[in-house]
Amino acid sequence: MHTTAGQISENRKRHGEHLLISLTYIGKNIELKTGIELTRALEQWRRYFEESGLVAALVINDGYFVQNIQGSRPAVNAALTKIIDEHFKIIPNVVKVEEIGALRWDGFVTKHLTESAEDEEYALKSFSAGFDFNPYLMKSTQIESFLTAIFEGADYNES
Image 1 (cartoon, helix red, strand yellow):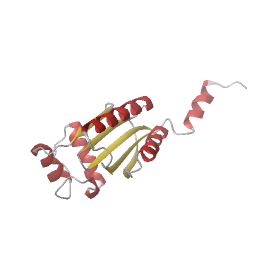
Image 2 (tube, helix red, strand yellow):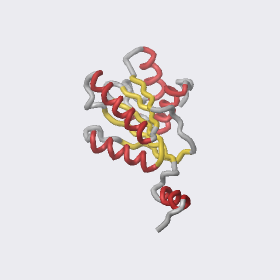
Image 3 (cartoon, helix red, strand yellow):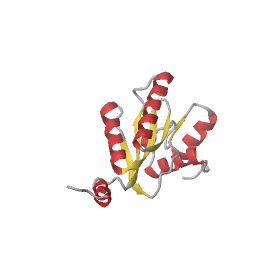
Image 4 (spheres, helix red, strand yellow):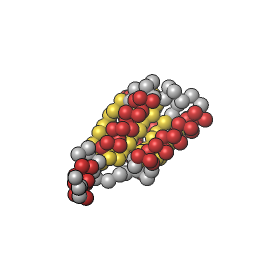
């Protein structure tokens, strides 16, 4: 049987490869105790996302993290499955999934929140509902504004 380029293209669409989605989830940083472990894990994830055609933004501190992954629907779902399978202690909590028209991030971008006055000020006063940075207390709109503020240079006082 002879297949045409049109048939191949149609077959690719059967699994949603032509649709871009954005998935944001939060989790607890209970596995990565040292800076070396964290650096190794982030490098592994950067390579995996790059090979899978995904982009991502990750904000992490000593207790929690927020990640937004963007790419084709099958690739994002495969990444979420990998996160659940390989990091079963994390138990990701999905806070938002939506179709998008274009990828937002430039590769795999990360921000490690420190206990500096600057990080603490905008993370706590502008976006978190508690005294410590805890994305579990934040609404999905606050999480989205938080990621935008960190990676796109928006005003940290937006909500």
